[in-house]
Length: 160
Image (cartoon, rainbow, N blue to C red; front, side, top):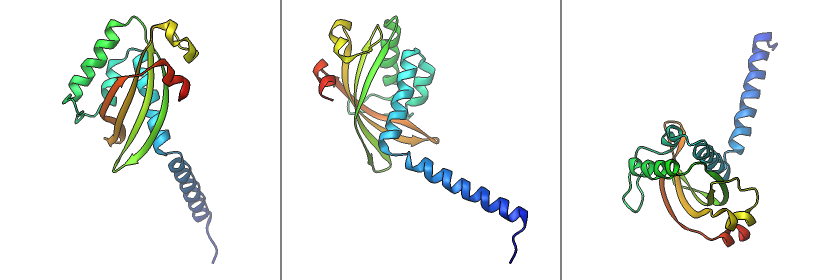
């Protein structure tokens, strides 16, 4: 049986497509998905782009404190508005698949000046928090479904 040129092209294209899909899916670990989300949030905060932040929060956001997506956006907006500039340093501590989402623990420092080195955090008067977040896929993109945060210490950056 001889394959025509069009059949050979189809087989080649199908093979490349399968390879690319497999390559992409291998990179879609919970850690990579969480890092991608966190980096998008970091950029939005540093650029003070509340519109982009809004797109990162699921409309069905709900946290243990009873806050909705509107409430959490108001908290983020207030922080952005009262800060002349915001620089972010984060460390992804863990990320894992849970049901149909991703649960991640993130250490975040926020300061008015660039944070080139975690040892500078005390001099920068940085706000430091642990965030426990849950991400779920909504409308084809990973969005924040829930978050809990509490104060962290400079030492947490040194040990994580």
